[in-house]
Amino acid sequence: MSDYTLDELLRLIEEKDSEKSPDLPSPLIKLSEVEKFIREKKIHSGVDRVPTHIVYYTYKEVWGGQLSKIHFFREFKAFFDQRRTGKQRVYMLDERSFDLSREGLVMAEFHNKGKKKV
Image (cartoon, rainbow, N blue to C red):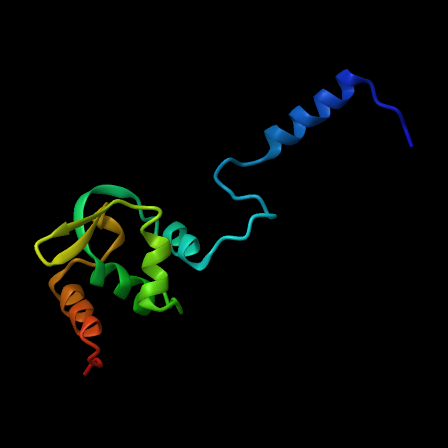
C-alpha cells in the first residue's frame, strides 16, 4: 500500500471528475423505464400542449413500454408540468418528440379507446 500526499489525492480526484461526461448517468444509477423513455425520445418541457393519450401512445406503442397507464403517469408527472384544458389533461412539452400528424393523432385516439388497428 502506497502513501499519497494530499496534493496527489486531490489531483487524482480532479482527473477522475474531468473524465466523466455530464450527459451520461453514473453506471451506479439505475434509470426507471419512464426515465429511459424520456431520454431516448428526447422529451423536453415546452409550450406545446400534448394530450396525455398522445404521450401514452408514444410510450406504449411507438417506444414499446410495458407499464400500465396509471403507473406510467404517476412517474411521468414528476418530470413535466401537467395542465387541464376542459375535460382533457395535457403536458406542456416540446411537440417535436411526438407524432402530431393527422395519422399519428388518429392512431393515438384508437389506442386510447382500446380499439385495435385495422
